[in-house]
Amino acid sequence: MADARPFHWEFKPEQVGREILRIEGGRRLEGSVSISGAKNAALKLMAAATLTGERCRFTNVPEIEDVRVLTEVLRDIGVTVDHPAPNVYEVASGDVDWLFVPLEAAAKMRASFILLGPLLTRFGRVIISNPGGDRIGRRPVNLHVDAMRALGAEIEYRNGYYFAKAPGRLRGGHVNFPQITVMGTENAMLAAVLADGHTVIEPAAQEPEVDDLIEFLQKMGAQVERTAPNRIEIEGRRRVRGAEHSVVPDRIEAGTFIAAAGVTHGRITLKGAPCNHLGAFLDVMSEMGVSLSCGADTIEVDATSADIKPLRGLDIETQPYPGLATDLQPPTCVLLTQAAGISHVHESVFEDRLEWLGELRRMGAKVEIPDHHHAIIDGPSKLHGAEVEIGDLRAGASLILAALAADGVTTIGGAHHVHRGYEKIDAKFLELGARIERLAEGI
Ligand code: UD1
Image (cartoon, rainbow, N blue to C red; front, side):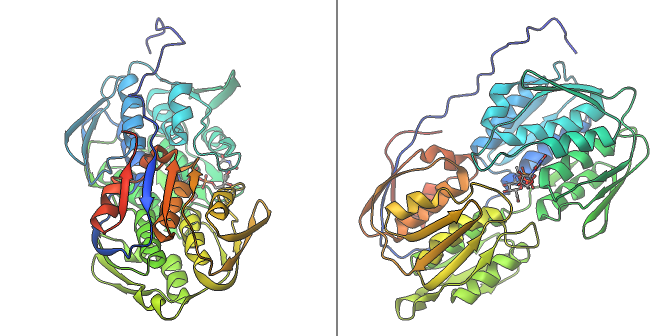
């Protein structure tokens, strides 16, 4: 580690311009759309590549802002990240010379905290900022820190930074999470790959992106296995090698487009879509009256019957996988505003992930939010164009859906947030027949 480097060096990723989207609603979506690689897998795979000095190659990486931010963070600590073609990234972490992940990076993207496990286990120390990320609840990282400590790490928290050390090598151990955490599971798993001995992680998150990471780690030569639905076991190795991997398709992007077809009474085909990862969400869509048909890697969505017979409202509750994804709660809520009856929404994973419904109300939705975890939606209500503002990724995409369904013109401020996690979302909607334009340049 180059200790001579000044502590307050400046992290300067390309600035993201503020963006406003103007959408003229009321048009049925029709046609086909290709689903990109999953954000929540790509970021962890790129972080996993730092476990080895050998080159790793990733295909089907989504061209999104979060990937660009992680690329900058990795380059700043001395990792080579090449981008030889669209959606292809190569990561080579031979000479990591500065084991410091700064506040400027972490504030832009909470997922930068995933670097804690791999850097600590490979290099024996790292200084990493307490992350910010989406404004959806407190989103602490205590479970990640506790997991590292269970593997023998010494971690101190000072001035917004975690100073983590592994005296000698991390050692295998039992990581028992008091609740399910996706990135906590992944961080623990990445740390355990190069630890000395056997690690058991329980309860381990079951999200498909976690399994995508396991598959990649196995290609690297790591001994990692899911030995029960909610248990992952790792036998630590001294080193792992470079490997190649294609990122799993983004089930959240797929779900967003399915809900978009629903709200516009459209008929679309999703290509490269992971039907088998969307079970709980597809059940909700079917119960509401959206017709779905799964092919080998396509999903056909037909909501045209809603012209004649309105969709049906229902009660939903978000849960860790295989339950209904919290990331699909916002698009589902938009669809519920278009469904007949009273729907109760229980957001059980995050607090404050229902706040965005206030903006939906400004577009004519009848929504009550009795507390941080519950909402009541009374539908169907005719949505109308409005000027709305978005503050986080998934809610942002959902306001686009609401605008597509609304009468008249909606302008959505803060739309650049959506590019954090959705590749070319406006272009994809344009292809499906939406009237959508960028009023200010973003990325
Ligand atoms: C990941 C996803 C995010 C998704 C979420 C839940 C990435 C980059 N992001 O986020 O899109 O919405 O899973 O499916 O993969 N918690 C703590 N302490 C911790 C960690 C988490 O209290 O140290 C709490 C959180 O506040 C939340 C719950 O645990 O209430 C679950 O969060 P978690 O599964 O960790 O979400 P992320 O991995 O951050």
